[in-house]
Length: 154
Image (tube, rainbow, N blue to C red; front, side, top):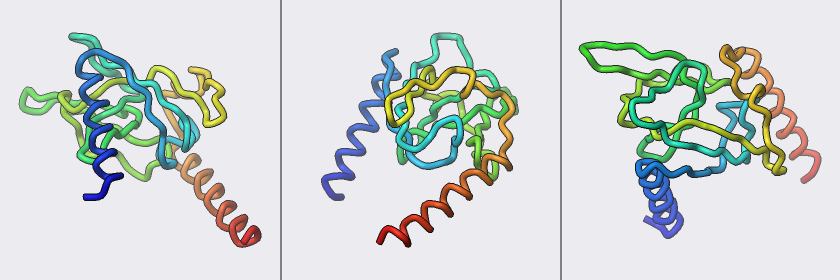
């Protein structure tokens, strides 16, 4: 394990612990899975859920995964054998994530700032019904444009 892996693991554990203790955290977004609600490089502010408060569909939640936080929109919840499962999906993802148990939910997104530091208005990220196909198409266009731009700048 190299030094960066160790730092990442330590920061991840600190973030999990702070949320478990009722404190808020902020993390930097990576990737395009939540585009256009959350752009890569944006700062995401996450607060833990209070006691007896449960996420509802449409909210953007953070859940714990071995590699760190996953920040996706709660698509639905269901109960099976007296266990509640939460299913999330990125706004531009091809499919839903695997169901998550409530113990893995770290908190909810309460604020987003674009990479330039400008706050995102709640109305832009509280979209209850994202257009997944259209969002994936926008991400595809952005990535193609980036590839062409790299060819001409090098």
